[in-house]
Amino acid sequence: MRKLQGIVVEIERTGEYRERNGEKWEKCIFTVELIGFSKRTPHEKLPESLKGAKVKIIRWCCYDWHYKISARTTLTPKETERVLKGELDLTK
Image (cartoon, rainbow, N blue to C red; front, side, top):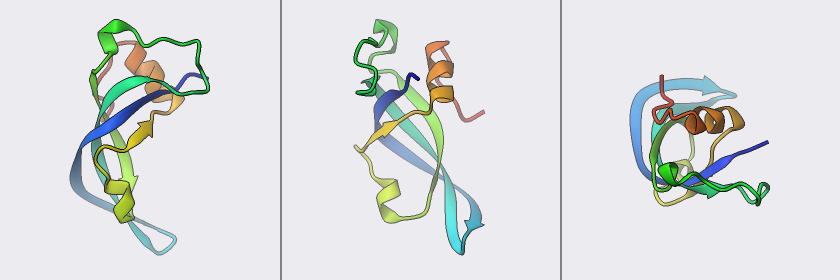
């Protein structure tokens, strides 16, 4: 299972909310600068064309630490496969 990692460089708050277990979650669009694969796949190398690429992903945020810029984040396996196929805007 391959998972890409990156650094959050921008967070766009959409103003769309949902409530789950009494907590208010906001849909956000994270811009993530790719840095490589997760440590669980040490043999995988990020293609040169994707090094430093900026990918837009959707995340649901509730707590203040969810909105952290410069935090490391891991893409899901599905998101990773889409990026490896050349798709950089995963918000659609």
